[in-house]
Length: 152
Image (cartoon, rainbow, N blue to C red; front, side, top):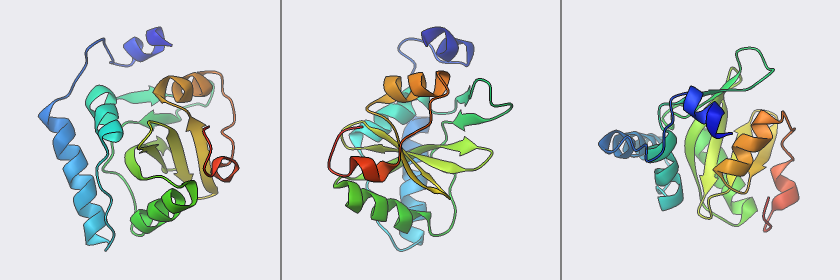
């Protein structure tokens, strides 16, 4: 997996610094514009610091990729994120999206990865390594509802 990350711009000790904080601020501000509070989480901020700005291609899926850009979303997504978070019994914050379908990649306060897609919520993994490994193995992500109050 590290070869795949390095091939796509990641390197050990990568940190996009103040840019990460600005991306997180923009996303939190957009949620407020939508009338919802999405509080930045330390776990999500760490992911943006380390992977922010990367395009991580989905092997074997054409041009599909995870775009590690937390500011992309749509009107009403903040309410949908808080609804999923309430069902999971945790807080969630966006860290990126899936292209080309624009499923929103979320991280909870425990570092677990979820996706909010137009077809529903999905558990991507217990952390970034699990989520990226599942992506590299082209594993289907299980429904998030299977993990309400549990670990992925």
